Length: 377
Image 1: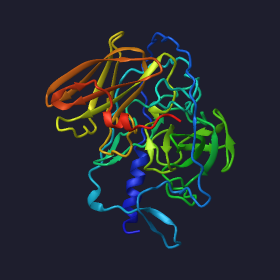
Image 2 (image 1 turned 180 degrees about the vertical axis):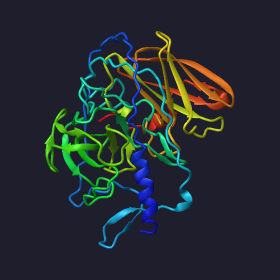
Image 3 (image 1 turned 90 degrees about the vertical axis):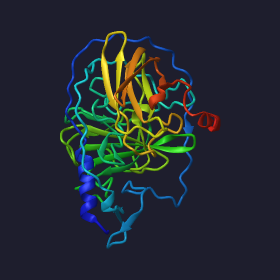
Image 4 (image 1 turned 135 degrees about the horizontal axis):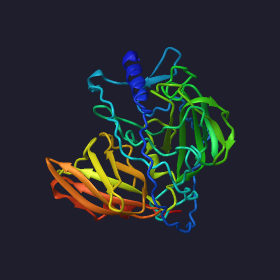
């Protein structure tokens, strides 16, 4: 490989940036109303061809062979590496109480896909770390957090988010070949028995202290996979969880907050935030405040990577676990404050778009994407 020390430096810092600091303030929120579960049919994934191979390194970008002829990592140019930045911890209040989750699969719209349960049981903290969500910037530009971090205690049981088969269990998810210096540490990858619009789905469970399954083992939703730990590059015990689509690849992730079921009576907000010229706003602060009780959330838009957006929403910001109700969204843009109100509906994804000095646009996702989106099979 042309720059092995550089690649090692990049990956080590990438995974080390998974934060484990978790400040909470207990607030009792009213439970939302429960809706009846609609009938949702999972779409069988396309069968893998006999000669197809899932790469153990989890890489989809160009790689160079090592002395043994195996892939050793992505080809990177030193000129592409910019200064290192870390996410800024926030002190938003986070309720320690959650209603039960909707049963999976759950989708009020054919464009939604709450197919997965949470990888930590309901009697534990099982929601994303608020100050380092999917898409969080580590390097500037183009390197972002590819999953969510769940700040569970060391030794907490990690469970399968859906039915499927274990295709990786051990060290080396990123590097391959069982490398114990792998940034993911001990990790499990599950290929699920269901897919989405003909594409396979995978979930990743990383930084485990112990693995309780083996490659080839069939699992059900809720099957214990191992224990939360500190292996790999971490600053404290937590579970790093990813959703991958089409390929089991580091560069085929999607935002898990659009794939894991919300609590009953609660919803999700997805946003598309751009400047006046239509380019995505990178790492831009968005404030969200409940009009019912004043509780406030702060979330940053994604880094400047476009391959991670949902095919339908084309979002660059997602925040889940919002109790149903009315909210005020606030964005600072060129020293002006832009606010609007948005309604969060139970068990559903609400969508908002902001276009710089043109303000908010409530017309929905791009029309051409909606018109060309295939019907649910």
